[in-house]
Image 1: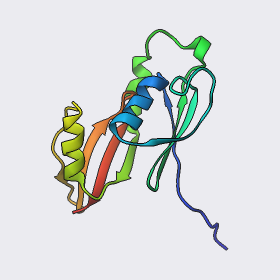
Image 2: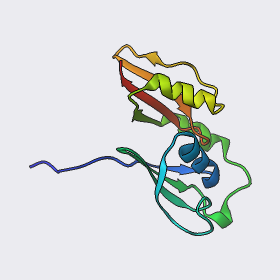
Image 3: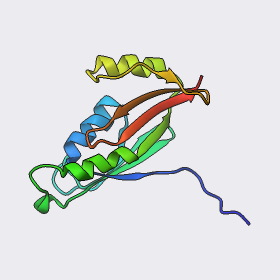
Image 4: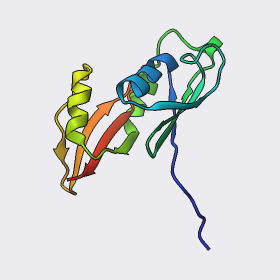
Length: 134
């Protein structure tokens, strides 16, 4: 008997929640579905984001009162091993929108396995790939 599962919601740790929220909400267009309410809506320790059928949770890597002044460069470098692949029916339009918001991006390309892909990084160095079958 198999397990009946529906959806996937990765959780990634971020250094600065307000910066991450501005990126995921204001740049990529996610909505805040649920959040902890420690200090203010943007300065919380955990948030659940949604965009259509895409779910993502962010959690602060450090408690508010013990966060270092700057991120650890080794920790950020390790984030490059993680990529969030997100379905995006109009990758070319996403490129136009994100470039218009000031992101420096390479144009989308079609991968050898037939997916049109646009790669970018979030403020913590996680890879994001917006993709759709070409």
